[in-house]
Image (cartoon, rainbow, N blue to C red):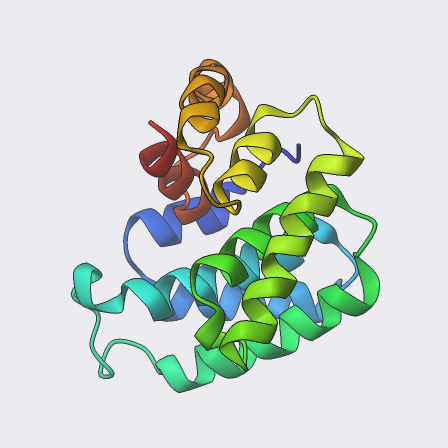
Length: 176
């Protein structure tokens, strides 16, 4: 799994400097769009701020969520065209898509796409507890199995999601 630490972005996100973080991520991605970490971090940032704006207390005065949705769409389509063999892309975008498919397009089509991406990430790297747990979570009636897998995820959580950026904090919170 990628080392998700990115000190400049982590700091901006942790301080809730949403526009500065967006601009920094977008500029970095535009300069190096084939950098997987940049693609995933930008996509995750856009997704997270859009879906969590209420709980985060973010208003339209704080950041243009319509622009974030457009960036998310662009980054998603770019990733689908360039990173379908990369388990980190498949896992993170598969997770985001399967959680909130309505932000990506047709609900049923994208929900299925997200689930298939989680499955593919798991197939590429079945030893990775985070991929396995996420994939099992996309399947019906797997609570008992997932409960056992969650123990393995917790054992790698701090190592896999170091840093204080949104992505690391989110997954440490969700999986703990």
